[in-house]
Image 1 (spheres, rainbow, N blue to C red):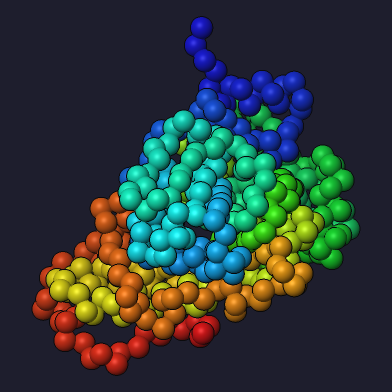
Image 2 (cartoon, helix red, strand yellow; image 1 turned 90 degrees about the vertical axis):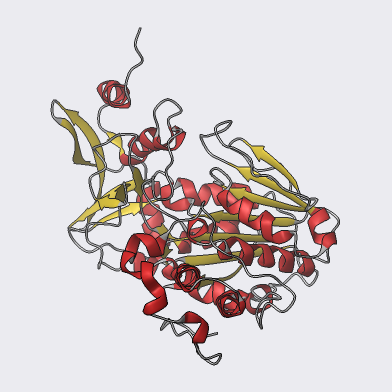
Length: 429
């Protein structure tokens, strides 16, 4: 007997239950183990995929996070065992870049790191990166973090934007929910009373009233997940990197259709009811609710930084400056420089948010973001090596600027003045 398609299974569920919350629809098309988007063996990230991420852009992202982890280890008193949990680690792209750079850091730090990747819905379908001779222990987990983390860091990159969420619409003074129904022609949205009072309660807690006619997404599962995960951390830090806004900005009425987007072959759309299981579905995260979720687990909210400011404080400029000292063809210098700048571009990855939580300080108080977000690369690489693009990273320059294939005659990079400064137009350190 042939297996039912995702569409057939969703239609059966709607026939049994009636129209379903969008969160249930999104959960099936993204995470169903038999046909869900993230359960597929197909490549999702990079030129052959549907989108690209900061780890896929340049290995400097992983190198800077490796330096951040070393700093966190130092702040915790250099414990002999230091657990790093990466949630939603995919096929280990970020982990590989972290490992590659960690071998250049303190030997005691390498020996202390126990790196665990938690990957939702793709257990057994990922290939663990090689850890080389760093001494780092690596393991892959299913859908849960370790039961207890004595000292360490929990990190995620673009995890919460893909958490299943509800969709609502404000009509007059009444909040309704957008449910998913089935017709002969496909799936449609229908308006009904909220499936749970938690939706209106979330907006009340945030002191948000949506403008009349505005649609919005509300993620109930993401904050609950962060609270559960963070409650297992005895001493350490949680870094949540994603795109979104504090609630006051996210729900200010300027996004009257909400923020839901779908990605397929690097093209975006707002229709989640096509290409079931073959396109990504995301929405901006509510950083206020995520901050409160960490606090509900007993953590301090250290701050919310833009990724631009975060990476610059860690020392991203040092990796750009180091390119001048390398004996590389001009086009390679340009490709690496532009890819690193892409990580801090205000209209791109630089506009992402980095939410930082901490717990277990000796003084029982926050460390302070400035104390946490600093690394040995802040003033220059000195004894640290630069990092360069590999075939596993997204060829942004080749894809966007093919005319730069003859860069020798356009821009003699090796002759640039040593005093040149990069100004991306955002917040300065």
